[in-house]
Image (cartoon, rainbow, N blue to C red):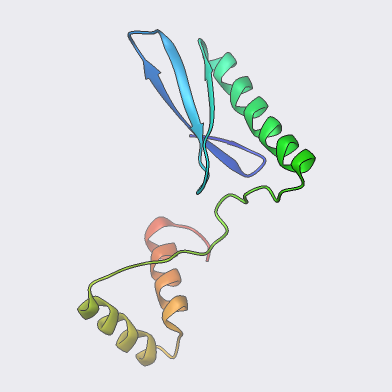
Length: 110
């Protein structure tokens, strides 16, 4: 995975076409890029992000921020209840409990 200006790109290799192609991770829309070498794919990714940001600015639309920190989550009602009880027991909000647990599991500072 590549990162540039807070945006992330995922790359795959097409053996038949002998080309790398990738997507910028956005919740909406698609921004793609391609290249034949590691150097080319890195530059194409950065160029795609820059072009996306320029397009948004020129069009007067707000660029989609990568990973805003908001997430809609669906889960089994029994798990929801268990988490709510655990949060109450730890004197935390449900959101804080879930965030803390995930941060701990993934080694990320919450």
